[in-house]
Amino acid sequence: MPFKVLAHANTYNPPPGPVYGASYLANETIKNIAGRYDIRVVAHCGDCSAGADEYQMQHCAVTSLIRPLLAEGRHYLIINGKNALRSADSADVIQNDHFGLLRDNDLWKNLRYYPECASETLEFSDGQKLRIIALPYLSTWMFAAGRPIRSYLEMSAAASEHVQNKLAEALSADDPAVPLLVIYHGAVSVGGAQACSVGAIVPGYDVRIPIEMFPRRANVAVVAGHASRYGVLSRIKPMVVYAGFTVPTIFDTENTGVALLNFDGTSWSHEFMPVDTVESHTVEINIGDLNNRRRT
Image (cartoon, rainbow, N blue to C red; front, side, top):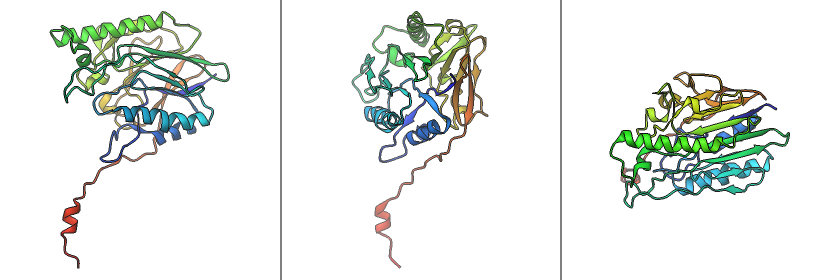
């Protein structure tokens, strides 16, 4: 049966104070999109690094998004910053809690790495299944901390090798009859050349996976980068890889809105949907200056 997926969906629940994560999709926006387009799954390959604290990740994923959707009886999945899988049909938490603090100082105290792979197979009420593999969120800078790695090239190679090994391990349990979606932060390499992705603007997030590693079936799709960010795709250039293609589809400057993945029962495709949202701005007001003004 056909279904839609909002893949690599960065969400946020703005805390008090300055605008936080304005380029992310607010939870209410995702709920509106999910209801309008009958999306079966919302999935994200977690990142909980500097600036994304535990409150933000847990609160936005569980309280603001999952619980309201549970009440609607839909099947949703969130993969958060701990590579935890939360499936809406049971609200159980499948935890791959293999993160750790790297350094005890202000610069590094919030940086975490996720060396493990998270995967889950969902089965919808109509019997349709979908397997999602979330590869480790692994900055080469984080991965290299505490390791005897001497150069950036060694860091990149070591991180890429680690993620590739995790992918191979996850694919060992692959069922060709079940649609597969792979999401991660990184890039797809074609003939040794790296295509654009998160690493294009964030040095260190250049984990590479050769395109040949992905199963070449019509029911397999790969999302590398935040394909769900609206209006900023010109900066991050995420990509989608479909089985049978030798070159990834890279979202360019014309691709605004939210990228939804469509599975028609046989193969994957994508489409861009408009987002009804307005970017927020913070205005600072000095109360002291206002109090000192003369009343007229």
